[in-house]
Image (cartoon, rainbow, N blue to C red; front, side):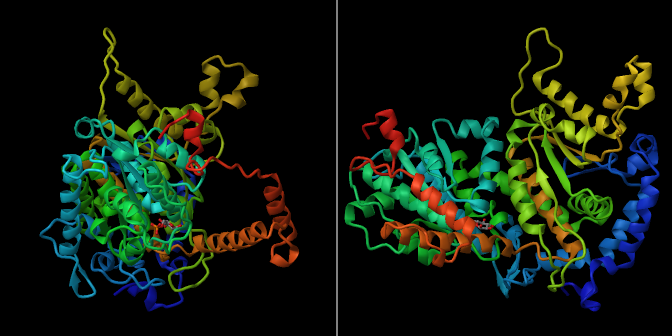
Length: 604
Ligand SMILES: O=P(O)(O)OC[C@H]1O[C@H](O)[C@H](O)[C@@H](O)[C@@H]1O
């Protein structure tokens, strides 16, 4: 049963479990150690190197001993981690505040798996959508599906934000330099439009030929303000540029489009959503809509049509199937392996240790692979939206902080930026991710070390620099002058983990994604929070909507925002300052929303 062990003492917090107490006491033992010494304990090191599913994980530079791990396993047992993992895989409504199952694992299930939600096997539903994606993307890619003027659709603009953007962008960035994916995407373009900022609209559309452009509107709810406004703007661009100018439509509940517009939309716009009713109201033919389900959280939706549709348009369905197979492999690993060999469980428990016991509230995600440059922004959403909570699953306010502050950049770029702080300032556990065989290998004639070797030399070096540091004695023996010694000391003892993947392929990217998703779930299960809701994003949205109403009313009446409009002094003044300073730029008819073309003198 869900939360059995913690619920057995309903109202009790994870901090009251005996293992939590034991871990707290154990901190003093660890504080007496230095990684410099721990790294010379062979038995300890062997116990902390894990290789599974082709992924090599070295946890030796975590500030732990075998005893720490034993205590963390005890904590996992007492917090009923296994029971909670099973509840997730069994389709129980573990997202209790929204009364939903949490089953992103079903979106990458094999055809022959069976996954039940509320008495229904959902795998056939998943595959119905995947088959539809394959049929549609094949048609677009082989030119069977043409635009309204008879041209093949070679460019795709994916409109979506948050989970409907960051995961697909991460995978796209990971694949665009992968040789197989490159072969499959020759002559094709995939762009993303997330921000409601008109600059992002201009960038996304810049240089695209609407006759060859397919727009995919991605929104789980189909109500997200930014996405819906962007979708209307781009729809207007399509209709206008395809010679069927309609006035810019600003209302989601549209009147029926005139036939010419409908034709353009029918051929050039498709949607991904759980809300097929609103998709239809927007004017997109339900035939051209790809569904998913409320048991797929937005930030966990990259393996649903949210990611697979745009990415299969770009790279073909077969490559996306490899990606799904990689994620499925990690799901099975997570479900079946014992704690001792379970990568997401180990990584999640080590994070609990770092955050809740050693007090390190942030972590850096540092892939030594440019193709993984969008991993950190994606994980930022998955982790911080999932685990940044203030109460436990029963609603009790937590006496400790959950979640982690995630940030990161690919190495070596980060080394020339924020690593100073990591080496001599705050202690921030680092996650180094390296690749054995690079997607691209460049050997310069006469050079023994390739670009990729050079990159990986840094990957190996940084972890030891953090762990060992440099002592005053070492500096003295290097003849460093006394006055510089304090500045050049590295205290070391800074934890990191090193993860090596054999390659950066669709399959391993799927594994990596699922490994991070599950480690986040592990942390939430231990802290006993609901990692699958996101009430914290609501308040800002509601207030923005109030500002929108007041601003519209002030504009239409040509007046200032007044104190009686209900904002405080500061906000009232700021909005008025904005309204006063804003010059309303009017563009010639037919160019009212796309100034970038005017700047370029485009004749479209
Ligand atoms: O996919 P949508 O319904 O448009 O939602 C897009 C995003 O909106 C919200 O702000 C949520 O916090 C995110 O979790 C979600 O991914």
